[in-house]
Amino acid sequence: MTKTKVEPLLVNYKTLEEFKRFKEYGNQELAMFEDLESNIVENDSESPFYGIYYGSALVARMSLYRVSAKYDHYFEPPQDYLELWKLEVLPDYQGQGYGKALVEFAKEFNLPIKTNPRIKSHGFWEKMGFQKAHYDVERDLGENPLIWMPSGVEERDVTASE
Image (cartoon, rainbow, N blue to C red; front, side, top):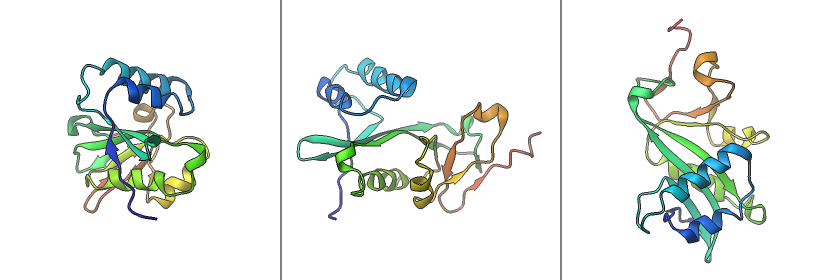
């Protein structure tokens, strides 16, 4: 497969319409949709959304939020990290490397990454080098985050703060 181009998605009504083609998964989807809608001010607004187009159709997307080091409860040493949300590839385009291309794009920032994967997607994330974060009741609030760490970064020891 040729190198897939991941590009920032413009915050506009065209992108909003394209998002409607993706499956809806409750509050997370609604929050992403509302986040996009509330940011529609001008076409070149900075956006946390990235996608891959096949021709003129958006076929894969994700959002990447940079979280400040002061809120880092996952990594050692504490630092800015990326929170990867809503990675999704349209059904007709799955298995063609688009999801992998999005994750590899996120890794290029060379910051640790945290994600809360969908059920049944753990195998994909493990292939991408993610591991389960050691569960912390107060920090994770029922989520089961997966994390990826670039060289020189370790998972914070959650037992040390007890």
